[in-house]
Length: 496
Image (tube, rainbow, N blue to C red; front, side, top):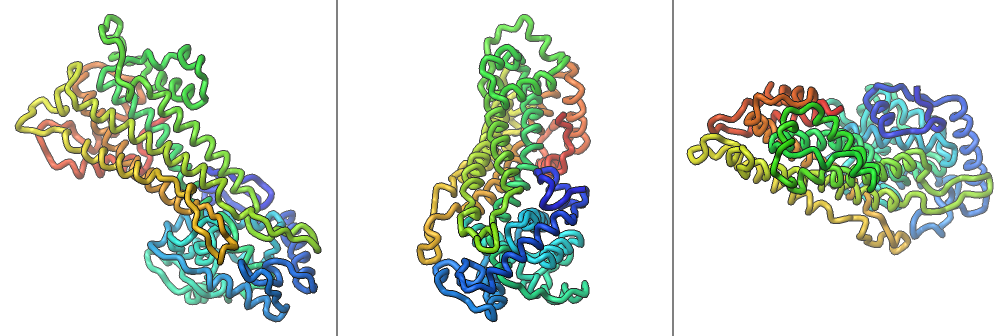
């Protein structure tokens, strides 16, 4: 059981909560912190002292004081006016992860949002009542204002919910569950929509996807090496211990495991080849660098998912600091780094695909024994080339850009929401690249039979052959590629 506001969230725990695999609760300890902070906000709201977001306007209107009678309308107007997102809705799981991360932040007792508001969000999470959130419109400071406004408009009976594949008005869905809209009180609108939960949700989702793809990259590289009949010498531990980057050491170790007891490797004992191309020889260095980037971003994300990122932060009955914890730059820069790391995994995989087509060391050109009449596997590499180039174009770092907003009050923004979305686009393309490389590798391995390979590679070869037959004569490969992509997306391949 996970305790909001008390326990530490991780990428895996967040995904487990979102998928109903881990129960998450609000304990008496967290409730006490929430109520204590709320009492501080009530005191400030009823005082004559101007406190940003509690009894003042927002952004450039921060110097305009609001009367206690107008407080509720101010907070509701905040959500209504900031719900200006455009584009397609984000995935339902992303909406759920956003709410999970917001509850974790609000439950720490620094935001001043009432318990009943947090409990309503928890009801949405636990009953899969998922708001519709457009994918575009956040600049990543003051947090993810537009997407968070869409996420929480349904609390007011505004906005929309998913019902299966349909989209229905929030008021209608609330009525179906016997719920009345909530009237927001002082500070609550700001507490709900200030924060980095859109950026964070995309980061969590991307890291969860990338962790498997990092392992699959090693499997695909090992299978390509077996098809090419390359050397395992570059993976020896002694080589990597004198340049001990953690990712490099990990990949070299995994390559040794994946190539264990390979009958192909035994044929290298009297081999005249001096070295393999970089796409095989440098797998530990390239895949390892991507692992190092992944580890850095995971560390940043897990700090963020246990942080309080709204504004102002309530410290006492007389002190609420208006700072910049909502600024997405710490995550945005790290995501851009990880997006480049993911793109490079696809870049080297495409080079291995090309390598297998060249007809070297006993492989037929284009991986077909009857070239000329048949084009074999010539054309799928065009697809990997296109996907690799698309990923390169997606590697421009949005965090390098900033466009001032809010009449200059918000004069530097992170654009981290765009970083998070592009990161996941790159991962989607990477899944397709690995699908094609694995299909190529299986075909190349056919020409190395009857040699047997490691148990893990033989099992993955069988998985491929369960849906994709050896290519003898040209056929439509679209169905084969689609089957391979589904294998990757569904984590069908054995990677450990």
